[in-house]
Length: 223
Image (cartoon, rainbow, N blue to C red; front, side, top):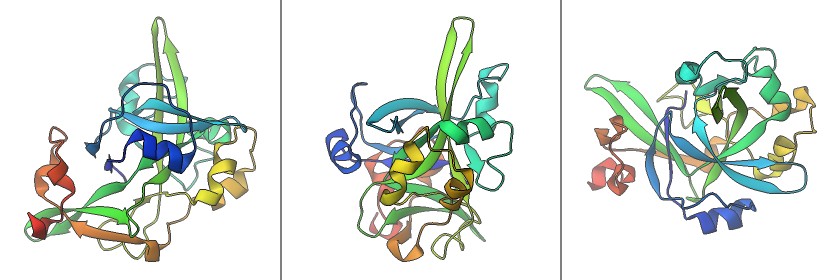
């Protein structure tokens, strides 16, 4: 699964790297992003990319209330095109979810040890996400979920799942709501190449979503 991640880069740098327009206000460095919080996503219409803030935890358009979001922070790639909560968004409501690292916890004899996973070049990257809009009475919500897949060689000794990280060359097809070749889209939901990734242990302060400090992303042996 993917239950925490980071996005510490400036909005200006992100706009240059991912080529999107953004007009929703300030984006602060985030060192411990948790479910139910607003996160930065990118949508596309086949012509341009737009940055949007969405709640992390998918609420399908047909849901009775928002409580379902707590169970919907991740969507397994396997069967995503057939599950009721995900099949409609997978066809036409796909998004990029921006990050520059994510956390997973490894079980040890001393307890769970958190690790941060990053790119070796330290650049931000994009999770594969799907989104939906929910309306009930005067309440409305735009929310999203992160798609997960099996592990690669970097993540497998920590967790048996990892978020899908898309290659830059796949962004356009993924974002185009008119592109609905589901078999091709499913083929993109593979573990990211391990040779491009790295990991390191971090402080267990990251265990609490209340902690939002730059020191959380420091390697444990440097604290």
